[in-house]
View (cartoon, rainbow, N blue to C red):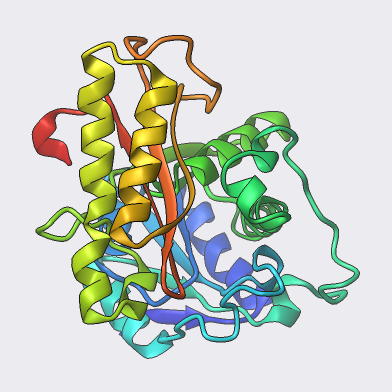
Length: 287
């Protein structure tokens, strides 16, 4: 069984032994309810470090008042078993009091200007303030040499990169590829909320991303590609927050034939909110 610690002092004591031996430490932050996408990050971490720490913490400050914090699935025993199989050395399983010792309301918040206000930030005000704040806390607690984040949460990845560069964290950020179900649906802890018919429809997100990529390669106007994607998703039963094409830095491209473009979609099916993205220069067989 994997070693699990909940307290900050115990965590730091454990990490100190590794550092004394000159071992490189990787951190994989998660909110738990882990699936093969998370496990792939652990396996990637093992290729980038001598020791791997995973954190499981459902962070209250990144959920809005009408979001699913209370019902977000919590499965610590299954998470520990999966992490052990994937090769994780240590599970950090803190409570709210460990992460926010002065209380959530008195907690210092970190804001990443610009990136925190568009797309996911516009749809979920304050979300990325909570993400940046909790990740900075984890970085300070673990002091990893490398941290791994999945590309499925692409905007989050860009926020973390900005945070690390601006606050001079001596941490390498390594992105992990999006892991998909056989039909292409991106793996997510929220997929289990989907009913049988919703699960069948959910694959329309990746289908639309692929269509957006094909249309961009043909040189069609970006605004028209985005509008058609919105209409197709709405017709399939989604309530769409956005379906857009952006540059890698999330700026608006001038033309669809630019290098490094990415399509991003966020939409709801019933009570379940799904996000996905697709880099337009990825090989076809990678997605």
